[in-house]
Image (cartoon, rainbow, N blue to C red):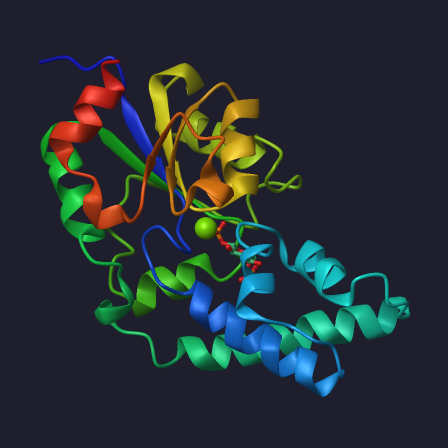
Length: 218
Ligand code: B16
Ligand code: MG
């Protein structure tokens, strides 16, 4: 059967892997060292947002020099990369790999579109680097989410029109990016975070191929 939708573009952090916890721990360590209050709730505001935007949100108006800003970004990334060393296939969110495999068996293309510059490390560490047809990451585009560029770049590399793709995202910025690119977004997470998505699931494991096909042929 020929599907109306030709490709599924997956966000990485919070959709395929549980690495948002490592991002939290790394930002928390930096925040503690700098005497800044930072909670798990605050961490939700950093989902899908580039490293420099994350630091701006964390600093919450606190003035620092350009050098200090760069040093803090580097320090957080060192902490994050250190945490990534313990990664295994157990860091793949339940049901995510099975869903990608089912989609591929159906003849639908797949891509990863993550603003993370550590995308390759995460995919290698979890052993799924070869699972996707296309990988675009924080090095692929200048304008990060909520700009649509990363998803448009994925669609272009897949050779599929944006309107023939769906995006699966856990971040408000990612849902906005998909909408801005005329791509149908499916949200993963609570209503208050991904409520702007056309369809929403609590977790990736709740999406089955049947449900996805219903949405895709909508
Ligand atoms: P890095 P995604 C995003 O990944 C994360 O959700 C976000 O919290 C992080 O700041 C961003 O990557 C940049 O990551 O510091 O590793 O370059 O959700 O787009 O897969
Ligand atoms: Mg994400």
